[in-house]
Image 1 (cartoon, rainbow, N blue to C red):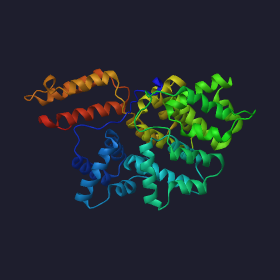
Image 2: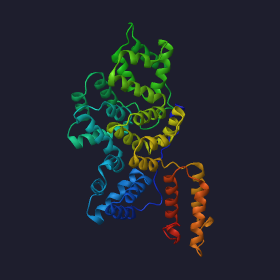
Image 3: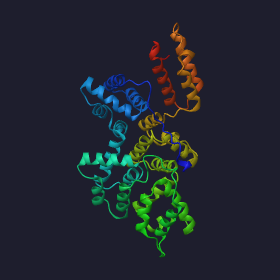
Image 4: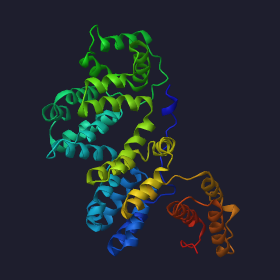
Length: 392
C-alpha cells in the first residue's frame, strides 16, 4: 500500500442544511445587482457547496426564472470569471471533456492538458469522459488522439485510455506478483545496451499505480539506476513528461499535484491561469487538503499564501473560498454551533448571536474567507430556531 497516497482529503464537501430553491433565489437576486460585493457573494455561495449541490440549483432556477443559470452566470460576470464559473458549474465529467475538446481541437495541441486528464483519472472517470466526448463531438476520443497526436505521446495516451492506471476502487492492498514485476523490468531493459522503448511505454502506461510504484523500486535494484534516468535519456518532449507524470503520480500523488500547482504559480500566463483553475477545482473535492500539506512539505510555504501572493484579486477571492479547509480550532467552533442548546436563548436572540460571534472569534480562523464561512454556517444553523438571519 502507498501510505503517501492514502487518506486523501478534499477541501469542499456537501453543505448541510442545503436548500436548492433558496440558493437559486439568492443567486438570481445577486446577478441583478452586478456589484463587486455581489460577485463575492456569488462565489461564496458556489464554493460553500459541492458540485452535486451546484447542479441541484440549476433546476429550481430554470423552473422559477425560465432561464439557464449557467448562461446567466457567464453573462452576469466579467470575462475574467468565465473559466472559473465553467469549472465550478459543469459536472467534473463535462468539464474534463470540454478541456480535452479544447486541448485537441485548438490551433495547437495542448499536451499538458491531455497528460493531466487522460493519465491521471480513474477508470470510471475516463469511461464517462469518453462517452461525453462522443456525445459532444460525435467522434471517439481514441480516434481523435490517434489522428491529431503524434509520436511516442500518441502511443502512451492510447495505452492509458484503454487501460487506466488508476482503478476506480483502491486496489493498493492487493498482492503484487513480484516475479511478474521482475519480468516486466527485464522486458524494458532488454538484452541490449538500449532500453526497449515500446516495452517502457506499454508497461509504464498500463500498470496500476500500486504495481507501478513497486516496479520503480525493482527497476532501481536490477538496473542500478532510477527509471526516471532512462526516461530522461530515451524520451523527450511531451512523451517524457507523460511517462514521468505516471511514475511520479504512482510514487506520491499529493506531491505530484503540489509540483503542478507550484509550476502554475511560478509561470503566470493565460495558459497557466487555466491550469491553476483546473487543478484547484478538479481536486477540491478529492484531495486538495492533502495536496496542500504536500505543498507545504515540499516548498516550506502554504499553498493558499502563494495563491494570494501570485494571483490577482478575482483569483484570490475564489482560492480563499475554495480552500474552505477548517482548522482544528474552527472545527471546535462548528461542534459548538451544532449544539443549539449550548448557545441558543429563545428569550434573548441578541445574546444568542453574541455567543456565536464570540465563539467564532475564539476559534480564530486563519483567513477572512474561513471566518465568513463559519459565520455563514452559524447563520444557516439559526434558521431552525427563529433567529434573525443577520449577525451583528
